[in-house]
Amino acid sequence: MKNFRVAVLANLKENAPVFEGMGGDQWDDLDSASTVQTLVEALKSGGHEAEFLEADETIIDTIRQYKPDICFNIAESHFGDSREAQIPAILEKMRIPYTGSKILTLALTLDKPMTKRVLAWHNLPTPEFQSFERVDEPLEEGMEFPLFIKPAREGTGMGVSYESILHNEEELRTQLEYIIRKYKQSALVERYIEGREVTVGLVGNLIGPVARRIPLDESAHRVQAGLRFLPPMEVNLAPWLEFGGVYGNTLKTDHAADLEYLCPAPLDEDMIDELNWLAAAVFRVTGALDVSRIDFRLDAHDNFKPYILEINPLPGLMPKLSDIVIEAEADGISHAELVNLILNTALQRYGMI
Ligand SMILES: Nc1ncnc2c1ncn2[C@@H]1O[C@H](COP(=O)(O)OP(=O)(O)OP(=O)(O)O)[C@@H](O)[C@H]1O
Ligand SMILES: [Mg+2]
Image (cartoon, rainbow, N blue to C red; front, side, top):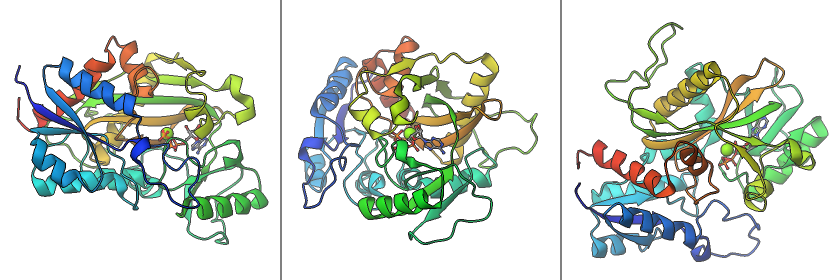
């Protein structure tokens, strides 16, 4: 096993800029110093040299000094419509390998409406939707209440709460005003899917020449080779009725340690196959690499039909609490092993091992 010099690139909450009028959840997507430290330790336990570098504008200089063979990238960055793509863009300019998805995928998947257009084009099941740039845009035909609203380009349940469930025009306009003003971006309005909350993590890369389009023939071979699916995880939202059964920001941050995570989720084999196939399809059509987590809702009113909510190509890696870490553990993969699995997947892809 070869040893590498690995720079862990992340944005720490504690280093994030502070500005006037900033929301309390502004940096909830960023990482804590302790999470990043566990990544460094994990890589060292894999036999590598590893160091954390703050992924801000100093990164060009610090990378030149540290001279990594590869970067372990989990940087979300701070500002800009395609912020998660900024560090990969710099690394490609510097010709330095890095783990995870590349520029186009990270820019695309941060933008939920744009991602849903791609999914819809591939006939993948995602709730019907409309994106709003203005508060007074009329609701399109076919968009019927109850609806669900969230910011177009955030994560960690930011802007998501029980108030995201919309029952009428008045609630729609109030929430549009709130989301567009607070998050300074367009709002995504979707059909509300009442049902169970399931997420699927995977590590690996699709093998071989892979068509970008999903085969129309239902019986056609489903291309999944090269991907390792972790057991699906369900969050039991039943005890959290005051949160409307919505896995929003408060639950994801303040109550992460109090939630009941069912992993493997109690689902039958056929459903797990279907979720894995959909996860692989989303991974494929968004061009994701190395690792991802795909979030679903199972429609309680339609025989638990799975709907894709989003793909997270930079899933949280906090020990014990992040969804994909819980999934890995349920499969006998420790946090440190998961981190090294992601690194090795990238090293393999670059032909470095
Ligand atoms: N169309 C919908 N119908 C019902 N609930 C929804 C819908 N869209 C989102 N939700 C709820 O809101 C939560 C957050 O949505 P989503 O996963 O899109 O946002 P996120 O903030 O990017 O999440 P993450 O923390 O995974 O990055 C979901 O886990 C789900 O509970
Ligand atoms: Mg999500």
